[in-house]
Amino acid sequence: MTGKQVKGYIEFTLQMKPRHDVDALASAVTDMAEELEYDAFELLQLLLENRPIDAIHTHSYGFHTENGRYIIEKIKEKYYEYESAS
Image (cartoon, rainbow, N blue to C red; front, side, top):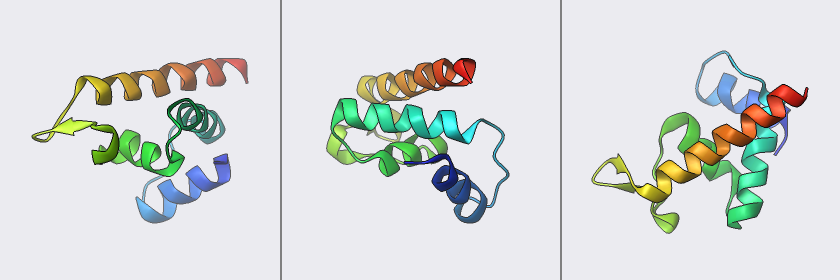
């Protein structure tokens, strides 16, 4: 996943202006996707839209599961690492 893809998704699909470093976000999501061996785009949707991912049990009754919270927090940690490195 690239920063350009993340920016396009935020601007065109979500109809919003990116407020964060899209390159750092793309790197963080890609890293987490590799770690979990899961689709980066779905992880981005989890983070930005709170969209549930049934295959990795991120939600239960509309709330984050422990696994869902872990994934979101790890992506955020990775994001801040990439953001501070740039």
